[in-house]
Length: 454
Image (cartoon, rainbow, N blue to C red):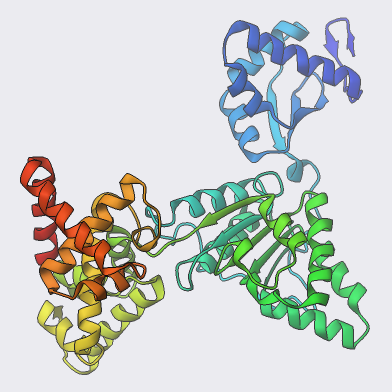
C-alpha cells in the first residue's frame, strides 16, 4: 500500500501481483525487451516484499535472478513509473529466501555412495560426441527440478556418464548448499530394496529417498527384471518428480532398449530428456589426453605420440587414459626418458597389439578419419541409415579400407554393420566414378588419404 508518497512494508499478494504485472507491462510497452525474452526472464518470478528501501523479487530460476540483476536499470525505471519513486530491485532465489537446514550430508543406511569432488564440469572435456549431454547436465544443475526432469544420459561404458552425474551433484551443491543430494548405483538400489524387505524397513527406505532434493542414479539398467525394485523405484520417482525434485539417470542404453524394464517406468523416463554420449572423436580424444597429461607432471610427449594414442585407443575415455598411463609407466620404469617419442610409444604398446588387432586398428583408424572429416560417428557409419550425409561417408570409408588394406569385400561388409559383399563392391565402384567426374569429390578423397597416411 502507499501512504503520502511513502511505501510501508507490503506483503499483500494481490497488491504485489498487480504491481509486478504493471512493471512488466511498462517494460513490454517501452520495447525494452521482446515478449519472449521478457517471458523467459520473469518465468516463475513474483514480488516477495516491497518497502521504501527495496523491492525483493522471488525467482524460481537461478537464471532469472542473474538476468534481473543484470537488467536492474530497466526494472528500476519501470518501478519508478508505476510507484512514483525510485526503489532498488533485489532478485533472490527461492533457496536464498527460504534456506533449508544446512544438513546436506546424508546419514543413510542405504545411500552410502558420495559425490566424487574431482568430477566437475570444469574437468569434463567437451566435444561433438558429448556436448548435448554436457549442456543439458549443466542446465539441470543450474535449475534443478525445473528443467528436463528426469535427465536420462545413455551411452557405452567409459564415455563420461558417471563424470557428468557427479558434476551435476557438485554444481548443485555449490549453487544450493542446503539441498540433500543422493547418488546411488542401480545395483545398490536393488540391494537396498532387498535388504529393506528382509528387515521389514521398506517404508523407511522409501522415506529416505522422498526426503531428497536431488536423486542421481548411475547404471539404472541393473534394476531391469526386478519386479519389487520396479515398484519401489516407481513410487520414489513419482514422489520426487511430482514435488519438483530433480532426478538424473545414466544407462548403457536408451530406455526402450533396456529389456526387462516395465513400460510404465520407460514412459516416465521418456517424459524428460534423453541424451546420448558417443565415443570421443579425434579432437576430443586429443584434448582429453592433453588435459590428463597436464595434471600428471612435466613429462614431454611429442604431438605425434598423442595423435597415435587418440587414433588407436579412443573407443572410450577409460581406454584413452589407460593407454596414456601405460605409456607414462613404461617411460619411467622400463625405458627411462625425459622426452617420449613415437619410437618409445610403439615399443610401449607392442605387446598389446597383435597382428590381428593391428588390422582391426587400421579399419578403426580409417573409420575415425572419415567420421571426423564428415562430422558423424562410427555408430552412424555402421548403421542402416541411408540418408545422403551418412551414405556418402560410408561408401568412401569402404573404398578406403579396400584401397589401403586390400581386404576381401565380404570382410569389409561385416565390419560395416554386416553388409553384403555386393554393397561394398557397389560402394567402391560409385566412389571411383565420382572421383573421375567430380574434382571437389576427388580432392576430398585425396585429403582423407593423406590424413590416413599420417
